[in-house]
Length: 425
Image (tube, rainbow, N blue to C red; front, side, top):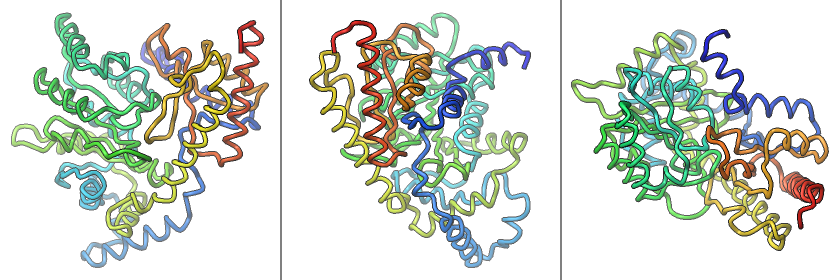
């Protein structure tokens, strides 16, 4: 790539973090990875594909839909499972949205791109993202030539400070056109927006006339505490709701969806997003949509029951992480309870290390201590922040023994680094 955009993406650790981690995994194949955000493969079964297809075929028969044609030919750009996904949103998330406002997509990335192409019109318009955050959204924004404003997470969660930042952006001749958020168990920070936070963002959106990109990737995976209503449930007309089945079924499907704001006569975002998709991916593979639709039909539109065993396993592994951290590190002078904040769900926790943890430390840790972690500094645009000391630990995709062994190796590495630098342990 020889464009400025290409050079920026190719040479930025932020955008290349996943490729870098993959290369380290390839370089050190015996190292246990606590870095991957992929769901546990133990819950991906071949029979899910077969039973999903069979269930959808039965559904088509009852609805007098030509199953052979809808599966083997070009299917509607908007999707073939929109009614079913609409029922799923109502059942699992209490979100009422018309099936006509849903576009089935190739995972999160396409949904995010479609939403941004609908929202952004000119170069003066900006997208606010929390920092740190997974690079998928920022990468999509860069491809669409949209200016990104990374906001430190502590400001993002503070309504008054966030409003001051928006005012400052507008005073400089720019316009905040949208805010992106993962309200439940954000990647990588694992933070969750409170109900007050969500209502505050809605209030700011109304006051300053911008849209909200709401990403529900981890919402289903709550282990304790009460479900907090989605922003789209609280106020629909400014929210582009982005969902994916990669975490709740399996990533190989590459099926997601975009639920646009309720259409008005003058602003039919669903129609616009569908038109844009016509010139990008044309449609989402109907075979993959059929598998998702069949599973949803089989479980009465709910993935909570489908994921019951998986959620219980993830909850137990989260408890193992907490126990191991407390037993091994609690008495250490470089560690306190704030060094590993408890989480109520999601796939990750953050551990604060007593030294800066970058890609050199990742490589050394993998090479000499056989464990791979993700430095949060890979997912931030900001320099010299607390993120420099944080590592994201994934607790979902290793069994109990592997998790314990990997944590022991990580803790040994931390102490090794401290001894090497003559710090007290």
